[in-house]
Image (cartoon, rainbow, N blue to C red):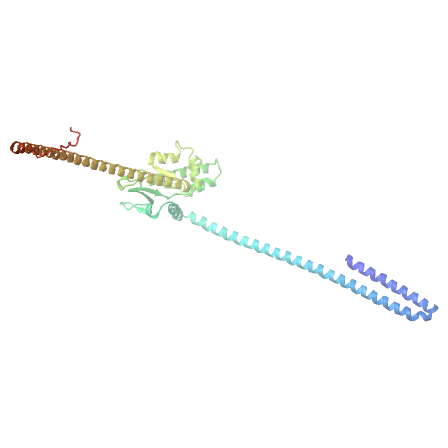
Length: 353
């Protein structure tokens, strides 16, 4: 707007100058008609220069307006594009959030079914075993002789470690959803503790030494939060003994979470390696014992060989002595010696000597 106002002011000034020049020349025309031709030529030149100046100024103003309009349009396009992208991004986030909410709701609906929760726990257990043990060292859904099936079994040489992953979350969910200190929370806690005790006893029935199981079993809880609450007595704090310790001490059931289960499995693996090393040591000891027997046999053989060599040397020396006697007999008959000099050998020394 400032550029346009300045141009209009210039035009006004130029027009005023033109009018003044025209007035001047009209007055001069009256005074000096002879100079009229020269004045008109000068006026035309000035008008032409003025026209060029006006055209240049208008062109510059138009160019500046076009550039300004182009910049404004470019900036507006950029802003519109950014706003469109932001709106699209917000829509995508909203769509993903909606999809996540639907999936979460589906998962919640799935976990409401105890059977589905059990399947999910078994799948979680199988995933942990796959990540730690080779395929031949464990089995999912291991059957016992009476037809009962444990969720998983880990094989340690000729021994079996049973693992149960069934767990009830209904009463625990009621426990954590009620207000602390309320009667409903106490009731839910007692119900959960009773569920836990029942699961411990059910897991203990898989300890069957007569079927080559270890003298302990794992109870897998697919929740770090529940395990932490049990470990810190946040649940079952009113009991005489910590539930995890009670399960291990009284029922030989080791309660584990996904994280602690990995640690226990690593311990089992290290124990397996130590057992193999011990077996190798026993085998080496047996081999050394057998080697000692062979050495004793060689010693006995060489003793017999020494005795035999001693007997041979005795016979050799006795034979030479007999040759000496022959030499004496020849001397008596022929009054000349054959010259036999007996070369006696020493017998090999033995421990008996």
